[in-house]
Image (cartoon, rainbow, N blue to C red; front, side, top):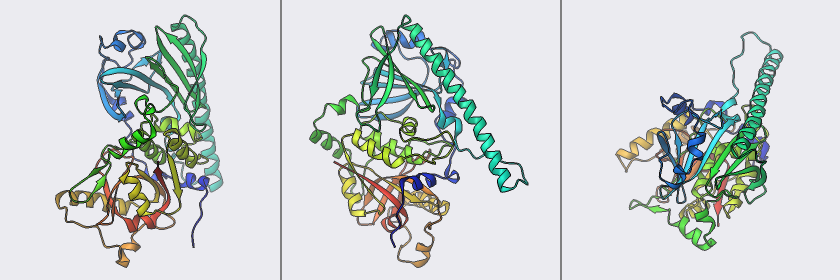
Length: 428
């Protein structure tokens, strides 16, 4: 009997707290011993030198991603901008030239994480529920205050930097699901955009020319046929029969219920979209609860495909033939699948074994004991990105949104088909 799932039910279950791994890039930044910690970089970053290339950006920067022809990195320091603490400062360079800076000041995903606090012993179910509600309400009130104050302070500081100029209204994004209003100022020929994401995210974008879309300009100018050819060129076919997309790399989700968002952000970047999981959380309606309850992840998946000028097929079944066809054209596939730590350990162990011995094989799915070990109906859901396949071995290569899992692991097509609740297959 075929099971039917609503997007809401799936969102409620996706990425339970048992899957959380505290591996966000924010950890190394928070621990960084940098001379720029606490330093206000406003004057430096608004000055012309860093933009014309005559002055290097201050501090140490970690390479983070390649989006089309742009290189993205983040500063390893806890600096300030416009007088406020910056959570994360990203730089976008093209051919070595600084193109934009993106500063995140407030982020609900990092603030709430997984709301899974330890409660006093001996509480009745009703008392426990009330205690959780009270703690969450207090945390929500604190965050709303932080967000509201920071937004007002940013608007005031940016306006002062721009000669007390009032902002104009702008927008970023082509599609309805990802289009967002921004406030814009101009300073010495550069654009300053303030993105305020519905009591979840505060971000400022500094750029030489500004942009009104998420798609990288080098991709946006391509005719559709040429863009498809570039995606197809990302496919690598190995001598052993493996077909894969080596350019995709994990985006660590940290201690947040974001596996579905981070997986989508991996695909979005592959398509040339300057999107991250924090803005996608705003776009799909994440609430400040530390859970995915009520978020419409399915809708934002379709919005990302549309923003990239692509189609997306969603199914409650995993079709190996459709997945291989999509992968062979340069399109990753995302699955929401039932997860177990036992199988996770097995696939990790096999990855190491296969690296030493390419003749190694996964357990035979025809063996009843093997099939019985697959996660069942009550297992939590988790998102994974399919990045390759080996048709002869009936294996698919997949990545996770976890640090330390940069090398794809392998799963038999039979297990993937049996444990997938939703599959998202991108197409032209």
